[in-house]
Image (cartoon, rainbow, N blue to C red; front, side, top):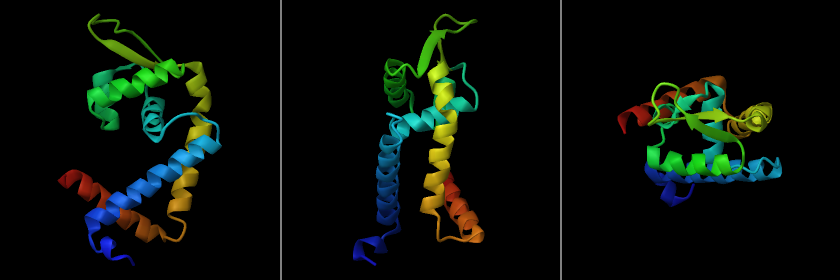
Length: 141
């Protein structure tokens, strides 16, 4: 193992960098024309769209300013649309377009394949422990 990986922090950062690049490559190869960050937002909206940017921000753990840029690009790609909130004109609601809804099976397939590839040599027990460790890191930081 490389000496730099003696540090858990660097190992985690480099593993995420590889994961991000691998995901980006698969999304390109699949012709989805979205980024890993955009995929995360679409995945979140697949579990319930018609929500405000603030609510979406909470659900996908992105700050509002970052999310606004992602939404801008998704809107430009005709994958989401903004509309006035029915009860509060000061807020906007984010909805999936039919085009984005049609991508759902392909996006779920890509995410499942990435997980399968990434964890191919791990047992179910190791995956459960890995998930627990990641959630612990997330909660602590």
